[in-house]
Amino acid sequence: ATGATSEAAAHVVFQENFNGENGGHTAYGYQGSLLQFEAQVGSVDLIGTDNTLGLVGDGAFLNLNGFGGPTLGFSAGGVRVNRSFSVAAGDLVTLSFRASGNQRSPTSDDGLQAGIEIDAPLSIADFTAIGPTSTTNFGNFDLVGGIATSWVVGYRQPFKDYSVTFRALSPGRITPDFAGWSQEGFGPLLDDVTLSIGVSAIPEPSAWALMLLGFSGIGVALRGRHDQPRRAAT
Image 1 (cartoon, rainbow, N blue to C red):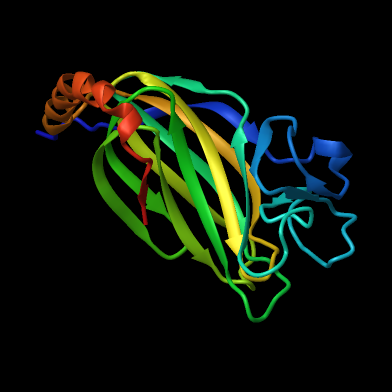
Image 2 (cartoon, rainbow, N blue to C red):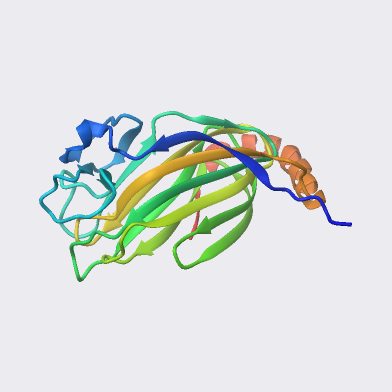
């Protein structure tokens, strides 16, 4: 006999390819609200097919380290989705996107971070980061504030697929965010962001046990939520 699987049917709850932003035309120094994102740190640039920098992508995309932000030495920019999404215990959450290096500086690679913000403590299992050349399962967390992971993106790297996935062990609300940083003051580049939330068909016995542990830990996490920093998996 074969064992039951725990595959999930994914439901896409968010998509953004930035082609509808500013008519797909280049605009430097975005600070504040985009159609589905808001700038959090520094500024970002919308890069369209009309850009004069020779940057190559599929339609419009974001430069996470905008020209309108700091440009001397280490600099950073970031965005977050402008709304949150509900997850239930047992949901499989996948944040997928495409990213490129800055395509400009031969002396500076870029840092890329993808994260999940939460508005109340949340227990998760199998937090996994998938990049072009590696897959890392960081394990289970009782979150307070959120969680993030990061990659180094080579300056010459074209757009490639990335994703972050985890299974929720307790209900809550999540908000995806992204950040980029470099020594050069430009890059990395972000495009094709998708958030999917799926319901597992039949959780494995170990998953049920983790869910029970997650439920039992919520009260303790709520008590200390203002004292715990956001945890980053790197």
